[in-house]
Amino acid sequence: MKMDDLKAQMKDHFIKYASYVILDRAIPSVFDGLKPVQRRILEILWRQNDDKLHKVANIVGQTMQLHPHGDAAIYEALVNLANKGFVLDRQGNFGNTYTGDPSAAARYIETRLSPLARETLFNPDITEKIPSYDGRNFEPVTLPAKIPLLLMQGADGIAVGMATHILPHNFTELLEAEIACLEGRNFKIFPDFPTGGIMDKSLYDKGWGKVKLRAKIEIKDPKTLIIREICYGTTTESLIHSIDEAAKKGKIKIEAINDYTAQEVEIEIRLPRGQYAEEILDALYGFTECEVSLTSQIIVIKEGLPWETDVHEILAFNAEKLVEYLKKELEIDKMRLLEKIFYKTLERIFIENRIYKKIETKKTLEEIHEALHESFKPYLKKLIREPTAEDLEKILQIPIRRISQFDIDKNKEEIAHFEEQLSAVEKHLRNVKKYAIDYLKKLIEKFGPNYPRKTKVKAIEEIDRRAIETKEIKVGVDLQSGFVGTKVSGSLQFICTNFDKLLIFDKEGNYKVLNVPEKQYFEHLALAGVADKKTVMSVVYRNKETGHLWAKRFIVDKFILDKGYRYLDENMELEHISSDSNVIAEFQLARKDAKKVTFALKDVPIKGAQTRGIRIADQKIKKLSIK
Image 1 (cartoon, rainbow, N blue to C red):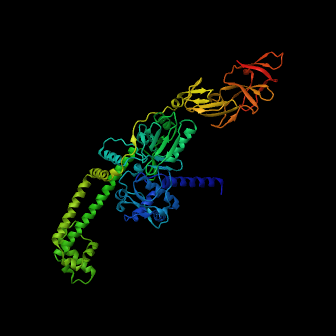
Image 2: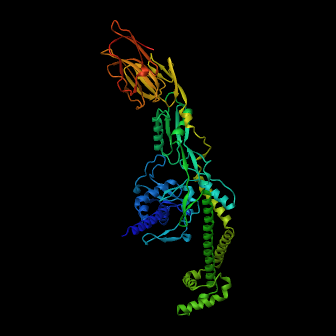
Image 3: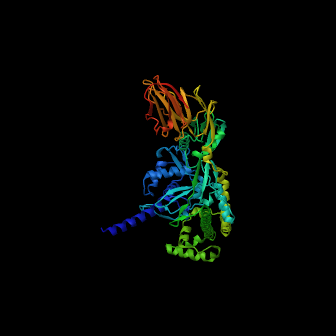
């Protein structure tokens, strides 16, 4: 095969693959809001529908008749569909959308179509079907959905070169928006998430923008917060992890966090001394998954092609399709009622006028049909249409007992009842739009209470993270007692932010970096300051064995929180440590004729904290003073 032929073949195969993924796997249809695998699951459940629960494993196996891929994908799609809470009833462990816990195995859980799905998604008379992948079955092209299921459930899908992210909306609000659309009124519609929370919808822009979500946090007492609702797309596990990470980075301070989530979310955050619930709220929103932004990108399949659209256009399309479906159903009902009236009238004429007597002497079926045809001619004005051969054959099937016990009055009552129904259907057909509005209002009345709004709409102010990070606190250091912290009133005090780290040096040659405490004791405390990775430390120390004097300067620029390090060797004794770069050491050697010597530490090169300094006196010293 030539290279050009190979390139052409690869290009053709890639285009086919990309089209298949877009149209038949990842992107939902605007007609019913379903992906193919979801539609096949619902079709199987409709066929098996008997108001009883079915094992999910059984439904997955039955769906394999229509779905050309593995059973794992079917099971995952079914669980996802059930957890959305609209079209499937469920029994058993379908996982926990709050915690992210997985569902039980397919053989242990059961499902069936919900009353809402049975009433609004199916009508075999108006459903177009095509052969399944192997030609042994038929599956629907789309379901005749009379509700905007796409916007109710939301959808996510990643295809080749495109992706869709549709946020879920409230059932009642969607149907009210459809009514407004049919009546030609303006409307506004915003997302509603099953996990609740607080939403700022100011940037939603009909689904072209984004929403900002916050978890619902209650203040139990000044030292305890309770998270009652989480943001859509997060779990309690991911939320707790984000809080832990923020605490490790020093963005917030917590004493403990406990997850008591079961049927409802309950995450308890307890605060340490010096931290209060009101003060930490902004930090939780600013640095954890207590606040997230969700971007909406609406791409759906319409008439075999991707369609980038918005929420209002989808609702207008769904309203138009609702009118179309209801009109088709009314026309079918009209035809059935006309047929019932026709047959009841034909039956009455046949029995009341004893037409059956005229066929008693006929020997062949052709003669019987011909006699019946002639006998009914005088009564054609009473009939909606002329009887066909099938109609005559049906009349011939009437048993003798039914002829002998025929009740004319009952027959007239039945015809009057059908005519009354026909009159109502014709009235609806004359104004299908009004009929559609009434239909939606009945759905709201019947099912609306089951789907209250869970997400509260409220304006959310932007969190100034920089302002949170630069909150000033005063730290006290008492060198005599060894205490350091925000609740220490020592001779040495300095200002830092509540997210700064403290650098602690002791007289034994050790140092460590830690978060700012309220009050903490350090043995042999020598110095405390801010670990800003740029302050130069000046140190003078003496060798215990030789008495020689040493000096060094260093910057602590690398560290692990709460890990101990050494800045002096084991046999050294600290004489002075400070962050003053103009330190001058004045000393006198131990010999009798020795004069005073001064040494400026600014001349010492800056090195690492663990490196050895320089010797500034190679003999024992008699007296040392630091200026």
